[in-house]
Amino acid sequence: METDVKLQESLMRRVRAAVLDRGMVGGLSVAIVIAAVAWIGGRLQEEILGHAAVESLVLALFIGAAVANTTDLIVGRTAGIRFASAQILHSAIALLGVTVTYQRVSAAGGHLIVAAILIVIGVLIVGTLVGLTLGLARRLSLLVSVGLAICGNSAVAAAGSALRAAPSEIALAIGLSAVLGLAQIVVLPLLTEVGGMDHVAYGVVVGLSAYAVPHALAAGFAVSPLAGEVATTVKLLRVLCLGPVIGAVAFVDGGGQVKDIRSHVRRALPWFVAAFLVLAAVSSMGAFPDAVVEFARQVSRLAFIVAMAGVGLEVDLRRVRVVGPRVLATIVITSALLLGSAVLVATSIPLDGFTP
Image (cartoon, rainbow, N blue to C red):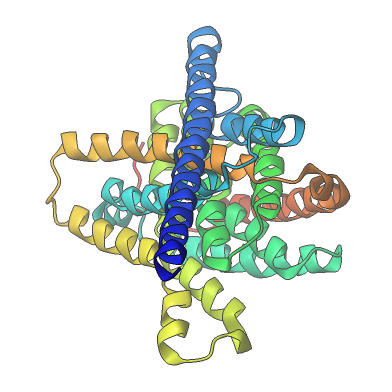
């Protein structure tokens, strides 16, 4: 009898392992296929339009959400989907550190570095308060604010993981903010024509206000190579705030839920944020050849696309429809204040680090 029971238990364990494996492989396969479609969509846009009007990362998110809410492909595949939206996402964030150097941002000059840090802090505070005032949950308000303050989708993804936000919250912050990024590429270049702003000041405005790095590149180089270089450098000032901000946000959000010092430290500094900071430091010492940096950039980008496909596959659109308008209002109000602050900085402080 005992032998039969043991055999049954062994069989059940094998069945559970097989189901888990199918769920892992199946879910990850769905995410990879969606990511491939999104990547192809992005490349087609670049070939036809000269740039990607909708980033592959955002396309992956939208396609994943559509698949999750209109088909039954996610049934029995949650293990692989979760792996894509968590472990792959964390690895992508860590790899970003290889592409960043502290020396590159030092060219901006002391005044601008301080101004950029103050703007990041201001957007985090004001954006969160605006979201709370409009009735958003604290974590969703933080997600939106972190994305606007630092580096867009990557920052939202990192904050969402550190805060253990719901997939629908991450999707809201990324999906609706993507609309802002598209608008910036079209609207920001008008500052040089309507506002008569020189290219250095314009690059500073773009770097301080653009939603994500691709938007800063597109809006900057659309005006001139100088504006593009300035915009990229200033944008990196905000990107370097990723680690400290995610750690601080996770620390504050943990509050009374954290039971001991070790768990508090883990929440405040997730491994992928620590890896980002360490890799950025190593990169700053010139340890990585250009080929390695470019390889890390491409791998990180592809990993982000797969991760966003996973996030999209976990989205419940019913929740998105309920709170979407309030998220959009938070984004618009905070972005307007951010742009105003960026223009004020660019026109009122010495830009010693840049020369036409």
